[in-house]
Image (cartoon, rainbow, N blue to C red):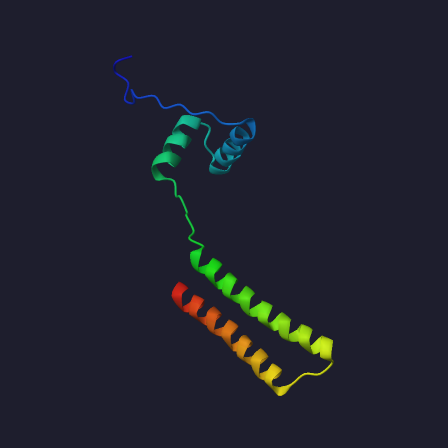
Length: 109
């Protein structure tokens, strides 16, 4: 079989679930040739890698701000009183959250 157009053989193993998933995708595409399908996907398929670093930073910042708001609310609940400073601080924390969200949105666009 020296005249083969593709003489190099590549093998890999899959689970039964993975095989079924591959077959379902082949059916969606309308192909029955698994070798052709796998070759096409390996060469031309898309790999999408999402970087969640900024979202994680944003979530951590929002979490810290939410913790501060929680502390203020606990103090209000314990004393039964709220002070103008508490309201000012809550509004400032809310503005901080909005700024973080705006920065994140600007960075994505």
